[in-house]
Length: 271
Image (cartoon, rainbow, N blue to C red; front, side, top):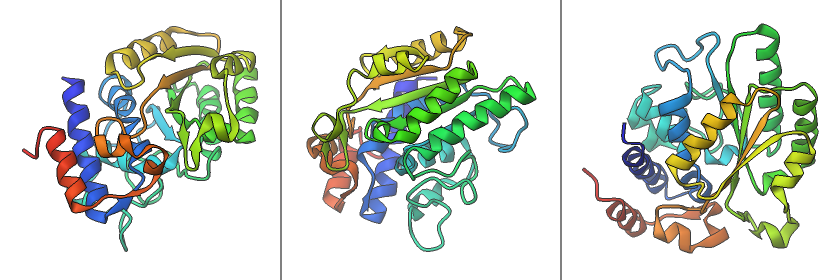
């Protein structure tokens, strides 16, 4: 499979979701497209025909406001009909603004209250170890989310219990709801912090490169003594110029019909 082409397709569907609604969390959804595509289409042991398959790999997107990206991938894989994407955050939808495992097939954990999803991922990894089901547990956190104390409590627990079946990603796009992370509460040096907390750390210079992410995941999967944190240097709103230019304002922004059409054309048009 051409993963780069798949990323373009997923970005188009994210635009359709948010463009149909007219507003949404576009920045952080677009920044993790490559990560989701590499995991779901290349690395994860899953079965869309059996969403609750015993021993399956799991992905907890702790930055749950990136739900539109998750939904675009899950729909493409066949967990639910693609026309559900046009119901994003509307009355009666199964696709709420933030991920909800009780409403969306394929979502492994309800998230959105920042820090809690990461704790759940650590708990799932511990449970997997106890059951000896050989699953790999993946989780994605935001850089703004990293300011939450709960992240570091969970980090200590995961390291203490040698959860080498846990692979985490930081979407390090340097922006959060109210501005730059370095201005609001700097988390640098991020790699050193995770190392001190007992984690194996891999830094991906281009966090929007499928190739670099794939190589990082391969390295993490063969590392057998610690949990791994993969730090992704990403661009918030990546791949859609109006979102990239909006900076921190793209956390959740209005997407007009004109902007939607512009974004689709930029991605190669709607086939």
